[in-house]
Length: 94
Image 1: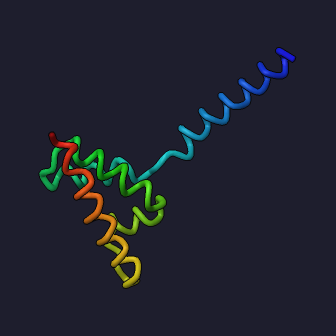
Image 2 (image 1 turned 120 degrees about the horizontal axis):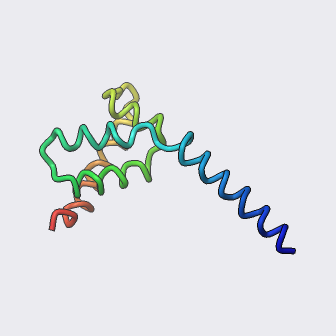
């Protein structure tokens, strides 16, 4: 029984390492840097980055970073999420 649990722990550890190193967000840092350039605090930008990445996948955040607003529905959704995230992250500075 203990060998089975050890084997499961090793497999889960390997999955975690692969996931973190190869499947992490490629847009988190660029989004965070863009936010910091706007003059917001690091705490607020971190909060907003987390908020946006919980609601959009990496491809969508990439579109946001490229200012790809060709789809009106997507553009409206981005505006709503950014506005809501900005309000939700106001307390991050305090």
